[in-house]
Length: 274
Ligand code: ADE
Image (cartoon, rainbow, N blue to C red; front, side, top):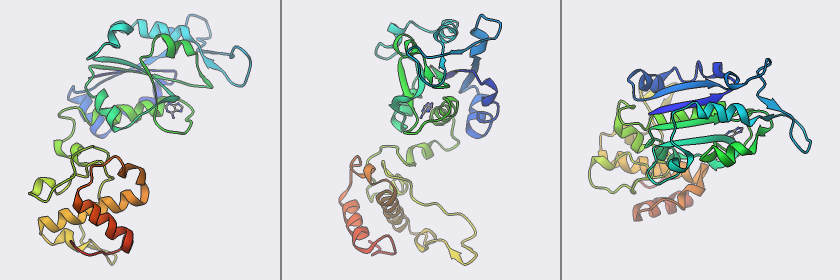
């Protein structure tokens, strides 16, 4: 998959996309990232990328010409073709005014051949970019960053790790928080980890006792069913505490509903084991 990032800060991307899974995916040829310096598409001596807003007001606005010309330099299908069903290319303008990025959008983007990310800056981007060249406007959260560069890194990371072969253990992308999966049943070890749209359960590694803090007993019991139930309960506890809004979107089993009732009754301390 190819990522094209359009930015006025090309050096910004030197560090963030050169580590861990993204780096390995790039080295393996699964992901290709090209940074396009917007100033390279200006025509004046000062390489001007911004200007004052029509109608007055604070701050500067990114000009349309360099962005249009940068996109025209890429071998992209027309916007009409890109918008058709099953299109494999997408042009995204990053801005706080966009649709909210989430795991579902990441999974959809991971099915593309090419994703262009335009990083906004200053007080905004000339609206003609959103109106006439971008396919969608995307925000990474309800807060205002000083530009779209961090948002672009975040999206490249979240999408790259979903590309087939990017993770050592393919199963881990399926099991973690936010991956919508059916609620686990009690049949077999395959259901021991899936969080099914809940926040992830807590993880522990050695030492079993660290400064007097012991790993929860079920995890060292060797009993797969006990481990599965403990993890499910902990995932439910954490979701109830930190993101209760997610629960309405999850298919809860009868076991889940009993666990939630127990958690509500006893709090998130040790509750009945079954
Ligand atoms: N640029 C500034 N804030 C942003 C946000 N929340 N998401 C995407 N791009 C942005």
